[in-house]
Length: 287
Image (tube, rainbow, N blue to C red):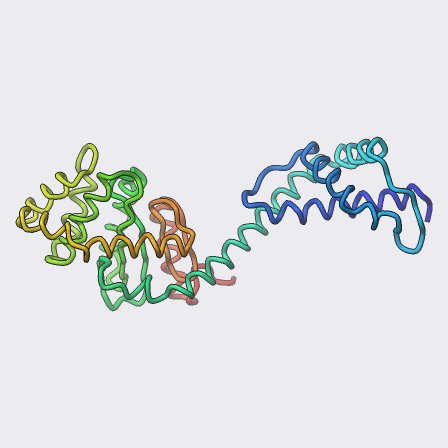
């Protein structure tokens, strides 16, 4: 085996190591040749000792002036390799995130499904449960609300759990407090109240929530007084703690089966996962 072949083997080994290094980054990114060079250069320093021996033959450490053109030629011969590496990295990261989510979900089953303070809509004994973390001032939650209503109307065996997760403003917290009390004192009126807040105009404040409570037939004075209680604070605090444990940072975020879905994914995505849960007990069934 000649020196050039050994050198090329070393470059390939470094590129493989670079891909492995990138797989452990927090955020996925599209790779370019300069990024690969930077990683390879760093790895050269770390692997200087190992680079002295390739297989059973000894070679001199490849210097940067030799290595850079080799990397450039390697990439230029097949520029799409960066796209393939980036795509593979995305797949690997998604798989790792899904595995982490499954572990977290298994650890918080009681907090997710059995909290006495959360909202339950639809069939309380439904065979599939969809959980949503929401904020009344979240525009995407507002857009997603019709998806929830449609699912409830079409599916008599669906249970939906709503978790107050006011993260956008103090107004969101004030509205969430009123919402918790409405659910406590008149759960049968909660969906009507919920829809009123999401279909109204402007910022959702504590005052707007009290007006919605009045509109559905509740006493806003008593609702407002109850909203100040430690029990109400505890309900919202438990949602914060649960969200942190699950790595949920924004709204809307959904839980179904062993999957966490961030963002307003839409009716079709939710419906597909609900159907899959019934078919195979998972959000994605093997074909």
